[in-house]
Image 1 (cartoon, rainbow, N blue to C red):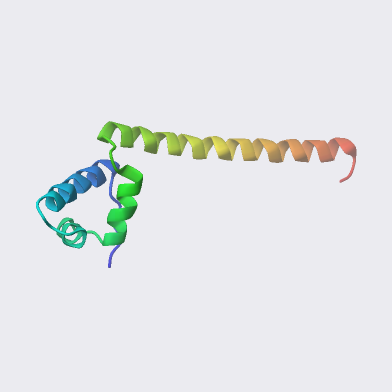
Image 2: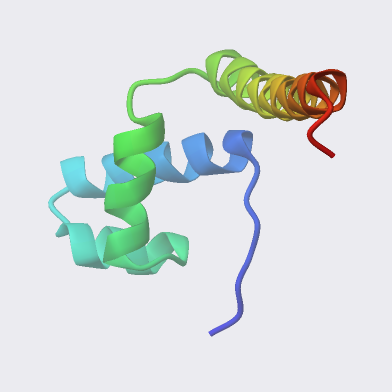
Length: 92
């Protein structure tokens, strides 16, 4: 099975489609199959995006990306400080 990358907007739309199918009497497996995902993917998406609006999902992804960049910056700065401390103490 090929791996697809879905945008948060697509995920939320597919979850809404699945909710409509489930409300219409379909099982979760049938609804997931109809929107082209597995049961596991449905549950994972519902856990992450359930109840979100599209703008909220976009903001979440932006914040996660910004957080990853900031973590890299802090790690690099900590490494630079450790190198400077070692050089200043003369243990090189």
